[in-house]
Image (cartoon, rainbow, N blue to C red):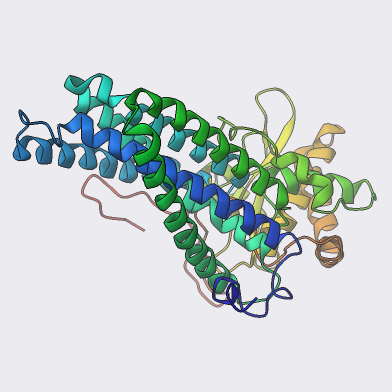
Length: 403
């Protein structure tokens, strides 16, 4: 135990979930296999770049290598801008997607020696794939670590120890990769893709096994709807293990997060309240709730709501907003007029707010954090202010806000 103590979170095992040990063990094997495959793919890239060949010039090889790395860096920036906001939802699927992308990039590198003239495009595509995979893997770990944590304030410690475990396993994997290189791929170069494919299969298998160990207890949009539905139906709230099937899947959904849920956050305020009268009605009681919510029509004829959280609203406000929105959808589906439906939904949410949060806590859900995409928040004028509340203005052509 003393040997592995530096790799374990403080107060282990009381500070982590029961499945932490099995998850960490499988992830260490996963990282070791990835490091071994990475060693072989690096060898293949060096051969393709001309390292060791008498006709190759060091300057040309260095230039190609820099261009390849530059493509990966640009891809990291672009993917962070385009899809990083979606990594919180479906973290298991995003983690698996990162694994598929990483292994595909490595296998592409292993075939590079067969087409040395195409080194730059092949290496660049591979670098892009690995860069995006690294970003997705790193970002999706946050939700996994949050679900594995059981002590308040130890998330940073758990994440740091996960990094230490990764270093140890990667050292072992690199040594194994070097041994495979000397014993197999250098004497028999044509075996490299086969060995790489076997390592990739093990890499993905151990990752899938590790993710199955984790039960996510943090609420995302689909789970928020399922929990609200059960509560309104006066059913027992499902526990995290009972909703774990919602986290299954080989790839994350292609649609935007929240597109299939009852409530959508982060919409323009004028889309929620088109005029001052409607805005005033929606803001009635908004400070107590912590959010603004209004009905809108679905394209398929159903009903859902649009909302904005207020500045300073706790994560619990987003959970109650989903309960509120689901009740509003039921009222609208029953044929109520939007104004009457909104009033009854307001009353229901106010009466059940505390009971709902207590029920979530008893069922084992994390209520201090969520994976809900709440987007931009709305700042209200203090109660003693006289300035009217207006929708936030967009920057003009010179980047100047006019609010």
